[in-house]
Length: 128
Image 1 (cartoon, rainbow, N blue to C red):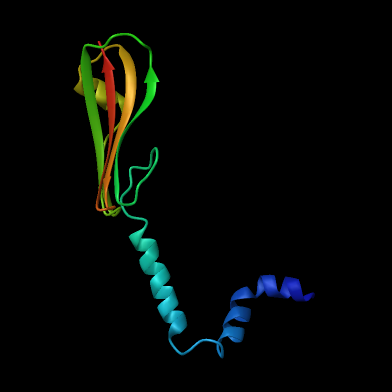
Image 2 (image 1 turned 180 degrees about the vertical axis):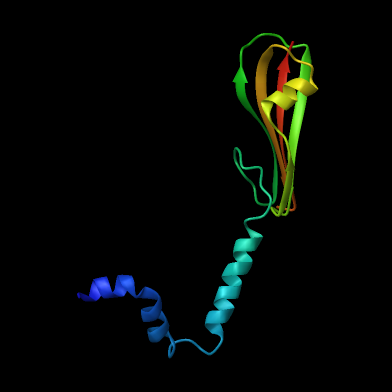
């Protein structure tokens, strides 16, 4: 067995064995805690579309447009709190039903995010 294949298959044991004397007691535990905290902090609520801001996001993204005039608008939204709880139906079908639209002329997505605490994604359909 070569050194590189041994290192690849036993990386965790190799790292722990060789790092015991290099780090003060408890620093590995502290490092793992900080990584977990950063992962939780930066993976909170997000709309998931378009450019995303960690602090604030408010945008409208056009997905489809025919160029025809529209007299009605329907909206369907889904919401998320802290990235832990999410619910809602932001489908095109629900937005079309909410606006009583038979012929869709455009579809847009509206996104909103505030500090990862609250995120909202809405589908906006326009038509006649």
